Length: 364
Length: 263
Image (cartoon, rainbow over all chains, first blue to last red):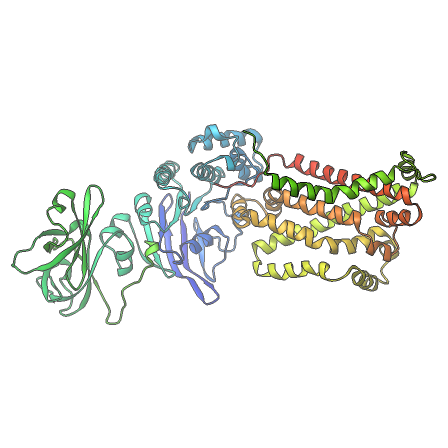
C-alpha cells in the first residue's frame, strides 16, 4: 500500500479554476473522502490522481514518487466509476479478469484471483452473467472487484453509489468500508453525500470552489466545523448571526438578548460572529415571562425517533430536535424559550464584509 | 394471446407491399419469356446470363470494390469517430457537415473533380477500378459509415469505458481492440451493409470513368437484350441480398454475446 500526496495541485479550465492549489497527504491504508457540492473540484482532484487529466500546476506523489506525468495505464491505481463502466461485451468474470489479462497473468492464477474477488464482493454465483443481466448494485460490486483485481496501490471511488437506490446504497457502502479495512488499501472516495462521507471515512476533506475548507476526522467535521461553509454543508445546523457581548464571561448577544456561549471567550467585544448550534442540542420550553430567546413554533417535521420543530424568533429561524413525545406538548403556535448548553455552541468570526455562504439546496 | 391487426392497417400494408412487389413480379414474368418468340415460360434468359463470362467478371469486380470500400471506410472512420467522441466533441458538427457533402455534390461533379484531382497518379491506381473507383466510393460511403458509427458510439459510454480500461492497465490499442470495437460492432456492420448496397448499385461514377462494374454491365445488357435484362435484374437483386445476409451472419456470429446493456 502507498501514501498519496497532492502538492499545490491546481487545475484551470479556461476561465474556471476547478482546483485552486490543494494540499493533501493521505496515509497508507487511510480512507479519505472528498466531500463537497457539485463543481467544488472533488472529481477533478480524483481524476488528477487517476491520471485521466493533467494538473495546470502542482504534483501528485504516489508512495513518495512523482507520478504527475505517468499515463493512467501505468499508475497501478484502481478506479470505480459512477455507473456504466463495466464492459458490456464481457461477463462479470471477464470484466474482473480484464486487468489481469492485460498484464498477462497466467491463466490459472487469473481464474483463481477472479473467483476469489467475486467471492469477496459476494457475487460468486453471477460470474457468467453479462452486465445487462445484473442489477445496479451488482454491477458496482463487479466494478469494485475488477478495480481490486490488479492489486492497486490506491483505490479511487468516484461517487460509486450515487446511481443506486437508498437501501442498496447503505448496504454497499458498509461493504466497501469492510473490504477496504480488510485489504488495508489506501482509498480516496468522492461524494456529495455528507452522511456517506462521515460514515465510512477515516478523514473527510470538505471542498468548496476548488479549495479545501477543512480536512479532519468525521467527528471533528461534524462537531467542530472549521468554516461557515462546512457548518452549513455538513449536517443540519442552526446558523445565527450574533455579536460578542461579554468576552470574559463568554456571552453573545442575539438581537439584544444575552446568551451564554463558552466559545465566545477571548473574542473581541462587539465582534460579529456566526453562532452554530446543532438542532439536537437545542432545548425548548414553554415560554414564561423571564426573558431569554423566545420564539413561536411554526412547524413540526416528524423524523421518527425525534421531531424537528421550527421556531421563528422574528430575526432568525431555529431548528430543534425533540423527542416526539416532548414535541407534542409544544404545538404549532406555542410560545417557546430556546436554550442550549453553553459548551455545545460554536462561534465563527465573520469578517466585516464576508457574506454567508450560499449553497445550492440540491447539493445538501 | 394472439393480437389482431386492425383492418385499416392491413389495407395500408397491402398497398405498401404491392408497391414493392408488383414491379418484382412483373419483372420476373417478363424474365421468363423466350428471347426469340416472346412466349412464356422458359428459363433460357437466366441461362444466357449465367453463361456470360462478363456477368461473373463484373459482379466480382463490384463485390471486391465493395469489400475494399468497407475496409478502408472502417479503418479510416472507426478511430476518427472514437477520437471525436472522446476528445473533440466540438468537431462533431463539422464532420457531420462534411459527411453531407457526398449527398449535395452530384456524382457527375464528383467524378469530373476526382478524375482531375487524380490525373497524373500512377496507372495501377488511376486506370484500375480497385484504385480510382474505391477512392470515389469511400467518399460516397462516408456519410453512411459515419452516421452509423456515430450512433453506435453515442449508445455506449465511451469516456467511462475508455477510462476504466486504462485504469486497468490497457494501452490505447488494447482499449480500442478489446473494449471499444466489440461494443460498436453492430454499428460498423450496419455501415458495412449500406456501403455494400451502394457500391453494388453505383452506376454514374463507374460508367463515366469507364470501368465495367456490375451496374454498368446491367445497363449494357438492358440496352441490347430485353428479356435477359429482366433476368439479370432479378439475379442482381438476389445476389445483393445474399451478400448482405452473408455479412450480417458473419457479424452476428462474431458478436453473438454482444449487447449494449445498462443498469
